[in-house]
Length: 262
Image 1 (cartoon, rainbow, N blue to C red):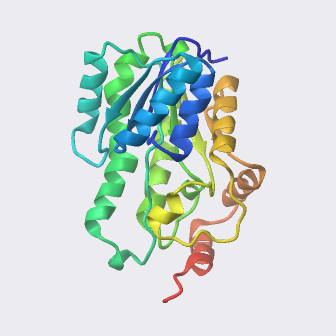
Image 2: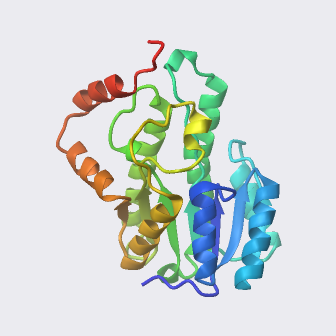
């Protein structure tokens, strides 16, 4: 079982939603934190709250993960503060909704930088720290239900999450013998600002809370799992996706989420 007390977790996208909930849950387990996001004010407020409530150390690194070379900047900050990372949680991501030709290519590039390049770069940058004591270290990469099927009108987001799923499962096997635990966590629709950011209609489906997603992730981490889907309904949908050909599911998804103006 993964132990938390006295260790340090670095969390991206830590200013709100699932990332902030990971911070709260880990602080309650007496882990020190390194919070990474663009929103300095919200992170400072969260860090102060958790330090006062749990007596942990909480560092804040303001970083725009869409920028080239940002992982090296984060690594430099970690080293200058003499921190050692035991748990890396790659959580930051955002999505865009709409017909591909109508979306800003600059924002699509930013989406790939945050959701793919930063994950690869930050994992690579911090791997030497994690491998100092691999049996006591771990990585949690947050993918999505969008990883399992093509996602019309969120083409780049779905493709980026499919990359994270494949990357993470491969990484888990590559470092299994060294004892480093890599977990892929796949949430579905969650009560966060995601839909507001993406421009997609939230729809009527029941959403999970960030706390539920985090509980699923930490239970899977403690159980030594390399893959976890949050929520019974989502687990069923993930299982069904393996039975249906991608062209078929892409056709169904297109009809379900087609923008109204189409």
